[in-house]
Length: 363
Image 1 (cartoon, rainbow, N blue to C red):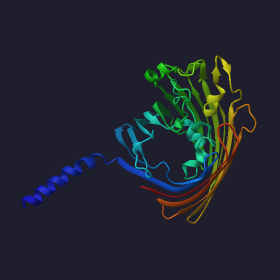
Image 2: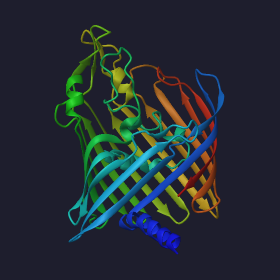
Image 3: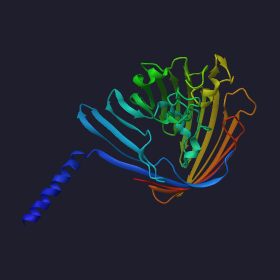
Image 4: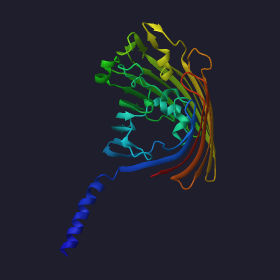
């Protein structure tokens, strides 16, 4: 009898925290594929690839009067090589009410919420730096002590950010983000206040989507490289994008056009030695068109796009063409086979042919 009472007491103690956190949801997505990638100038190879698998918790608390506290903690999980709780996936806390939503933390920028209308494939190879200007360089990855600064794809999520979303007005809404990394970036030549700001306007109603976004890096004119005397890079960059989408029944299409200097090609465009521009050129431009058709448990996808890198050299254009097939085993589990092709002969990229065969399970 005493054992039964003790067991009930332990069970009640364990259940109490869960009841208090009833509005918290645990979620995740496991995405792994076997890929063959043949990318010039490297040789072709097979590999097991993690495709942005993640684990997270999110929830809210009703504060009364139409106001709620919201939060999310999301971590990258490397299903292929075992690295866990990595990457700059969304992590934020904030308030949501009748006047909109205000959050602080690490968050997706409004820019992606427009360009992402064309991010429809499963493989991570489909929406990288040759198909999306914003995914290749955002200024915060420049290492001023190196002659070869890195150009990572951190624009998908930005840390140290303040984010505001307006209420929905019959399908119309607006978003704004401020990124402030003063203590870190002031020493590197960025602003000591707002380092980057991004705004977006959207219309989403029924089958139609339309939006536009503008993003600007508020940096000093240039940064020097200590081990490359006389070399500087202009980091006062900006970029804009428009996106359109239409979805009716089993068919949907998406389109985006973007132009600007907030990408890795601008690192070359802005590169100077003793004040002389080494790689002259214009702003990069990109357009990307996607289509999707669903029938039964099957989904067909295709995409085509062209990017002008903005460099004043011959053959500076990049063509992207993709096709994919997805079979839905259930609402949460899918299989895919996707082909990613690239035709390019630039200073940064060559031709690419890749095949991804993968599975995804959401929970």
